[in-house]
Image 1 (cartoon, each protein chain N blue to C red):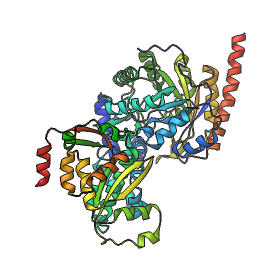
Image 2 (cartoon, each protein chain N blue to C red; image 1 turned 120 degrees about the horizontal axis):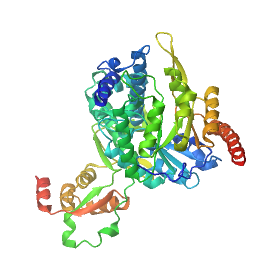
Image 3 (tube, chains in turn red, blue; image 1 turned 45 degrees about the vertical axis):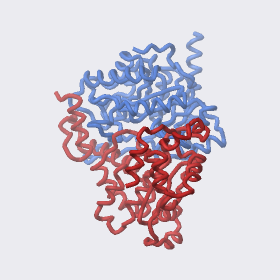
Image 4 (cartoon, each protein chain N blue to C red; image 1 turned 30 degrees about the horizontal axis):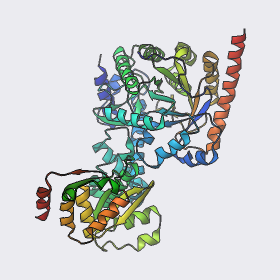
Amino acid sequence: MPTLPEIQTAVRHGILGNGDATATLSDALEPADRLTIYRNTSRTALTNALRLNFPAVQRLVGEDFFTVAADTFITRELPRTAWLDLYGEGFPEFLQGFEPAAALIYLPDVARLERAVGQALHASDAKSLKYSQLLDIEPSDQGRVCFTPHPSVSLVFSPYPVDAIWRAVLGRSDEALAAIKLSSGVVRVLVERRAGEIEVTRMDERRWKFAEALFAGHSLSAALAVADDPDAAAWLAAHLAVGHFSNFALSSTESLVASEHAQ
Amino acid sequence: MFQATHRCSNLIPAKAGIRLRFQHHQGVLDTRPDVAWMEVHTENYMGGGSPIRCLEAIRRDIPISLHGVGLSLGSAEGLDQTHLDRIRQVAERIEPDLMSEHIAWSISGGTYLADLLPLPMTEEALAVVCRHVDQVQNTFGRRILVENPSTYMQFRHSTIPEWEFMAAIAARTGCGILCDVNNVYVSAKNHGWDPLAYLAALPPDAIGEIHLAGHSVRQLADGGMLRIDDHSSRVIGEVWSLYEVALRRWGPVPTLIEWDQNVPPLDVLIDEARHADALIGVASKGVRRADAA
């Protein structure tokens, strides 16, 4: 008699379509038909999760194409958990190598932006760090401050205007879509959830690199060195004012990180 | 074993409630419909932001039950501690009046298969489920309810009838039973069981909640019929009749109308709940008559 782990492995393979589980099933009529019901439910649930998590990608490629892409992706990357709101971590990478979508060169980056939007949408409600919490830091220690980004905040970089594409597609605006020039240059955006709403904001290169260094947990002095701009202190104040950080710590390796960045 | 002090050791009234879906959040907040309680899928509220804030707001007026679909109580490889922690975090914010899960499995080899898969009805599976129910009840410090599945296939090596399996879980762990009457009907039709005998075999003191839902009928290649529990339509007459039998047997029980696919306007859900409430009302009079006699 097979054990529970053996039965569950056989059924898993049956559902994923890479094995026959019918030997474990009773002699009822049409055991393969019965297993197919579970296979279809599983596949539909996972495809729908991807549709919800990548709505702009679906609109760009159409529902049928998306279903085929999702079907292929699901066989390569199944979720590890029942919380499906963040399922599809590897979907942008997958699209990058998905031959039938190769003509849409910006598609993987739209998926990356949607991934950042999804993370912002579903991030936990961590408290934001307040400026007043930094007042006790000795002036000599300020350069060693390392911030923890708020879980809803992230940065996206693309050679294509993915933010404009994303807005036009979700807004169903053919006019806006037609006005987009793919060759308009690189785009750097900050994605966040503010008061429950998603905001995608373009940043210039210096501001973006400053934010990138801070969000990566580098020390303030290292981030300032990267930014190399007299306005950087004001940028930091703006980050703090809108709650882009959830915490901070004092780094003991300020000079090391700074020197790495100086290279 | 978890000792329950009362059969319905919660604040969910023995009335009809509805499954709350995102599309009805605003409608519920705006119109404050006269519904005794609501149930949500716990997995839909695991992130931060708007959904859980809406649920917190609704929860101020309406008792809430957290119904999990992804804990996979029947997985041989053990429970996912991260998922258990996420459920605990939702429970800490919502302070639900009831918590429940399914007698099924959906995780194998560390991957989530996104369906409630049937267990072989064996002593080994029963021991696994009971160990996990114990673990969940100890983690949350409260009694949970476990729901009987709707199934489309059975395993060659099953040795325990499903109704005895359900009763044994309650007896061994002290958990309650969420009896999905539609699932009893669907599985009984699919496997040739007697649904009345199924209900009769469940321990009345363990029943903490009833689920009702619509299902569809699909034809198999051999011409046979299979009933599919798809929660996409009204409860059918035969299931309402079986529900009346259940109420006569157990007295008034909190009863949830589930409708998760092709979700209708809020009014339709409330209308289904009204029908359940009317039947609960009849059952209450029966109980009072029995008390007086």
